[in-house]
Length: 243
Image 1: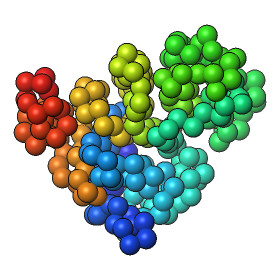
Image 2: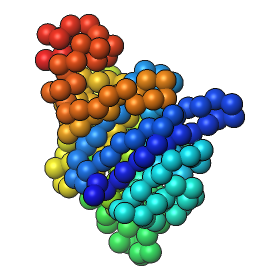
Image 3: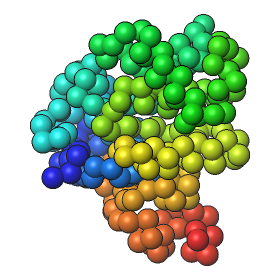
């Protein structure tokens, strides 16, 4: 059984059907990426998993138990952490304090949580010099690293990452994806929504493509890179460019 299994998931925003009978699975210890254009339903999929939107129909099973319809707090307690698009760093808190907020679901002493937050700077050395700087002083790339570190502080079984490279300079994008690869190396499971298909497929074990709320296809990265429709839509229009 996969760590996460979604079956025939549909989500509506009023009269708009954002997801239509989507079925996918995420194996434990893997990185799975969701590809697709704007409005394809990628972020809605993550929001349904983390309880931010309620499914109209279908099933979401995590570690063998249904979580469809549970609230966000209950889902966090079960081991799912969601890093949404937009970073959402608290500007009046320091980098360390922002990271520590990720452990709000854990019953541990402040000192213990602070020590673990400090350990995050080993995984994110680029933000170590800014540990005591306020969130508003950080660059976009630094804020993204803080957001991911905060998500990891929940000690998730499954980490949901929504567009972690959005709006970042290419050199920072490279750093963010190195961190995703390191997170997988450490044994975490990641479901990644990403428009940078080339980078996403480099770190992923499996990929799915959503089109207008429907699952169009899925496969291993090398299989998707051989699909002309994927290459033309997301990788610059030629198979050679995708290599």
